[in-house]
Length: 202
Image (cartoon, rainbow, N blue to C red):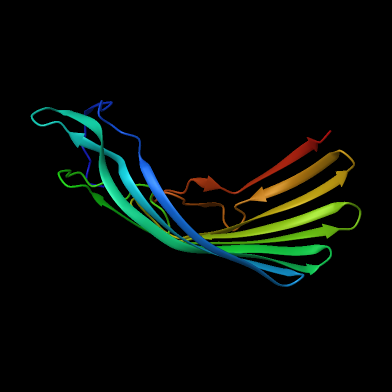
């Protein structure tokens, strides 16, 4: 982003308006056989009056303004597959493209607002085991992000649970592929973790 002052004063921007978006979506859902369902959605979003921070002429003060506009589009594909009565797969893929730019008369670059990846993939396996046990695995891939640059990453979570009437005891492992991974910038932030949970549903 173009705004990198070391020491600034920022006021609230008395003329700041609510950000707005007009969203268009077209989708289709089909179930070719009883065990398979597929969904496809295409979308286009037009953004108006997005956030920016602008220098007030002749001062060291910066002010919140509506200096950014643009659009995004993409496609989402998702589906489920009931392999067995006790085993179900669920997955999805999203392609997302976004282009933001300065409105006329605004000079500070906020085109990286959101810092979204172009590609996201998810696959989840859910199995009902004997004796009221459940075992789930979720695989997740996120593509690289532009600013600050963040490399793509792959990870997976797993969950083992036992249920009895109103009680559920579960153990979940998160981000198990590596000890830690990066989700923003260059420094690892998301560690591998394991936790247990007791749930009572009345």
